Length: 128
Length: 105
Image (cartoon, rainbow over all chains, first blue to last red; front, top):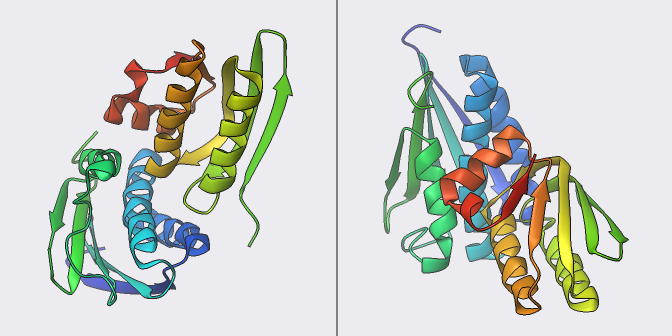
């Protein structure tokens, strides 16, 4: 892929049984970009952590929207959830999830009280 | 949808062997927690967790393991984890949990 921004959107019910669907879709997109197996695993884990957190906080009553933006060798993932307000991963008991996401992705940005709750980015070969 | 986790336990004189096959995520974590905690309470002995069939675990699952370790320590036992795949071992290192669990190859 050369300098073209492709965008894929996935909307899921905020229910536990659909988190594996998010993992499956992001794995497919990351594979298309050319990430290796370890990198795909990293992205999959990070995306799943955010989805699980939103499922816990909205208790199945909402939709989670994942927006995958693909630019050359980079994948940018943003999350929206209309029922969620506030800041994700702000609680003390979410430290494990925060540690995992920040270690696996190149960059993670929290957007408190914004339509986009969190966005994360990873490029091929940036982090081991 | 059915759980994508299979748990097989075997009670031995020295320890309880627990084999995990599949994924521990938000959809299977409650089943995993209930089963593991019950084994710890019922038998009060070391737990050997065979993770050779475990393909995925998230922070919820790791949190359950930490809680389970605290429970086993109450009866002066521990949890031994073996057969971790590299992708899951990486999560133990990232979170520092490799320092509190006994991890065998």
